[in-house]
Image (cartoon, rainbow, N blue to C red; front, side, top):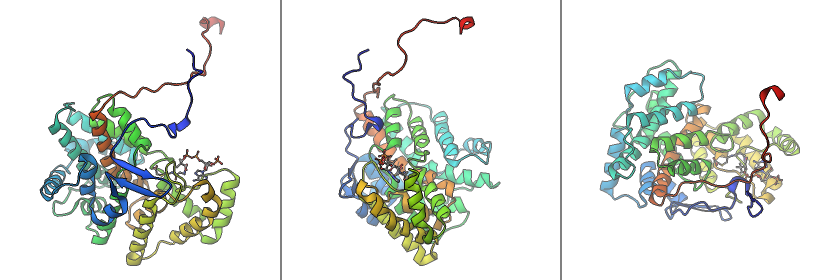
Length: 380
Ligand code: CMC
């Protein structure tokens, strides 16, 4: 095959692969909009469920639509005993992202009617995935501690209920408020790797549980959602603000990336990092400071003069781990929490993909052997 006219773009940088009306990013100005609404305004005025509705159905809900959506999500928070029992068989040492990926995929077994052109099926799948993912994460957390998962509480909001199911106690309303804002901030980000993965899977017309499971698997990697865990590990390894200069120097010399820095889209500080830093400070004012915050601030201050010229600034993951840690969330749940939120974006892209579907099937530039003759085993 003649490959001479093909131009390779590793990572598909700058190559549009779809049209989308869900999210717009201006990486030079540091702007992020969901369906035309600025992320700062949504974080201030909306709730996660309202934002999820906006992303998935395209418009802000009316008050009755929001009431119904919240009520449906609340009704579907519970997990079948079969899913809970399946999760009890997972190894305790397994990563919660793997537990989530398997559990999300298992929903396809329970709701197997793949009627993706039936609006009722689509609506129910959206509700189930948004409702059950937090319950799955909380259940795995309790199971691996040797406890039985606890049932969701209907008197608590989406975020307050998740923190309750995770920690087995009702948390301060500020914790639930901050957590809900974190979910809004992470809900959508155009064609990031996991969303692209969701769209590729969706384009085969498989079921939405498989779409979300494939996206969860993609989100788990350290260059994507997994970076927020690595940021905390990095800050702890630096340990004190005085060690920051040598850490940066050594990292740049050894060509090691500074975790929580850099983004394919942004050339300035990620707007979500700005809000997450404010949320972290709000939590520190109420519940006491995390000493790693001083390390993070010093790292930001000293890294920007060295990396800013390349457009490398703190991304969404730089401060999110500090927020989650202050909320008492174990480090290996940071990425699953990202999934609680990003499922809204994945589902919006699932619907959009189905609206104008063509299966993804890119080409490649072959670099293997010329055609050759088979060598019998005894002659090799
Ligand atoms: N620290 C130091 N140098 C960096 C960093 C960093 N964090 N990020 C990029 N660079 C440099 C890189 O070394 C390269 O330099 P040069 O041109 O001299 O070789 C240049 O910047 C371009 O880097 P790249 O890796 O080709 O950029 P990319 O667009 O392919 O990757 C990224 C984007 C986010 C994967 C990358 O910046 C990175 O690995 N960052 C650290 C991991 C991280 O924080 N990931 C979370 C991303 S945001 C949330 C999400 O998407 O889930």
